[in-house]
Amino acid sequence: MVELNYHHLRYFQAVAHDGHLTRAARRLNVSQSALSAQIRQLEERLGQALFERRGRALHLTEAGRIALDHADAIFSTGKELVSTLRAQGQTRRPLRIGAIATLSRNFQLAFLKPVLGREDVEVVLRSGSRTELFEALTTLQLDLVLTNQPPDSDALAPFVVHRIAEQPVGLIGVPSLCPPGRSLTERLATAPLVLPAFASGPRADFDALASRLGVRPRIAAEVDDMAMLRLLAREGVGLAVIPPIVVKDELASGLLVDADHLPGIRETFFAVVTRRKYPNPLIQELLGSMSQALPG
Image 1 (cartoon, rainbow, N blue to C red):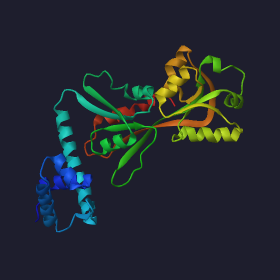
Image 2 (cartoon, rainbow, N blue to C red):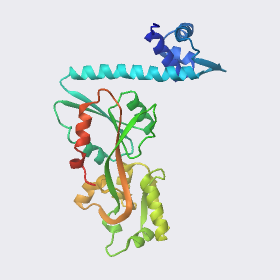
Image 3 (cartoon, rainbow, N blue to C red):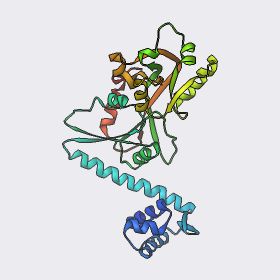
Image 4 (cartoon, rainbow, N blue to C red):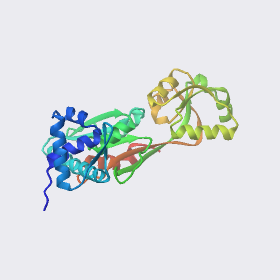
């Protein structure tokens, strides 16, 4: 039986992800010659060439791609083992949540509410881009990612996507921009509007609605950040196309008014996890509480 040297495998994984021997050697704090020798030994043990050189870059062979898939799975399992067993020995269980930087803070707070303030839970909340957070989820640095745009899933990145809430999207602004007695078509045609960015689902639905109504909107601003949409609405820049949960405090105080309903336009929120042998039990608690935590 051929035994595998996991030290060699770790070095191979680093070079494979970096694509460059010199950079990987610098990052691993070893000499380039020593790193090259480690990879050659692994190739001899496996009986396959793992890389082919093209110029200064190293590219995985078919065997190398298979080896990398297994290496990633092996070391991810190791991280999960350490994380799980360390957590069991702690008084407070860590809960690592990632949230897309543009996501509503009110939504995040409502989702986390069941575990906030618990003496046995330590919440670590990380904000970032979809690419950063889904990579951190894959490498088990996060337990769950909150997003309004689900990831593409494949066999190499087996995400599990939970649809946890849907919110109607309204036309919301300061009272002076929301005089009573006007139809939706009149509001869309006359009032300045603050719209979500083109990449979002609600924006595509809004454009389709405006087209059906024969309206050319007066666009005051286009932003991809829910917090900025909220601020612009509060400042009276225009009527914001936004889910009410984002501005629930302003609506409750009367600072903002829900001027009209936008038929067929909804914001969908997702919780994304990966398939794990030892999932964080707190995640199931949060997912199970969503029906009580949020309307819609």
